[in-house]
Image (cartoon, rainbow, N blue to C red; front, side, top):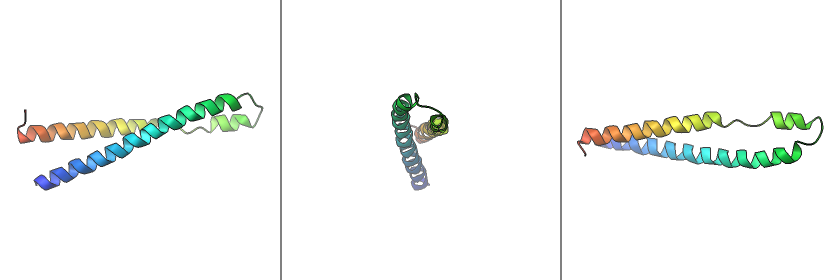
Length: 85
């Protein structure tokens, strides 16, 4: 049973870490795109399609926050189950 608990913690940690890295990448891309939009935004007609077609990373951020909370909760649960201080 202990091995199963360790495996669950390991998998949660890996998924959470990957999600955090993805979120940080999204923040980087959002900042990079904001600069590009400010430069291109002064052009005419077809540019409106480019500006309106931006990718929204909000679901990624929310998913990352949920995964971090689940992982932290699981780690606290495991610590309390072992009787740790």
